Image (tube, rainbow, N blue to C red; front, side):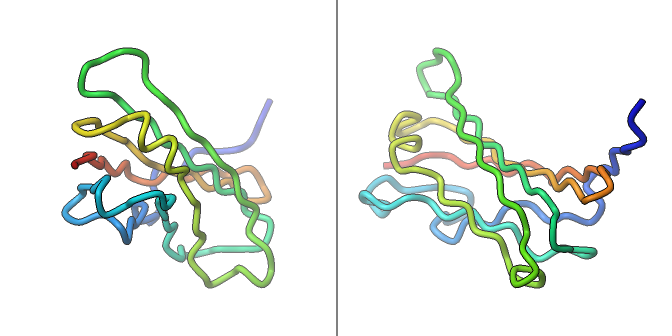
Amino acid sequence: MSTAKKTGNAGLEPFHFPQAVNHKLSLKQLGERDVEARVPVYQEMKAGDLIDASFAGTRVGGGPPEYFTARHTVSAAGVGHPVIFLVPNSFIRKIDRGGIIDASYKVTDRTGNVAQSPTVRLEIVE
């Protein structure tokens, strides 16, 4: 039996997307670049924390959702610095104009405690 506990958002802030304006990602502005998703520095950040990022995309016309996930282990040098995930441009292009991306992350510390960030919803525009 696991003793890990889920701790809600435990003070985690949502992802920050520097390329988004008012929660909108412009395909035109993006060009061929990947999208930067930043995990802000959080309280109790320690070396060995696992950060699992999740991006779920829904096309405007429906169809099956698209997913992109990534994992990062916080290093001793990384403590106190934002963690940056790069979301592939190809993933954004699959969702296309009018689509929605829901993005969140969870932090698992070395003792197995899990904290979940709030979800950010981005709209893909021309």
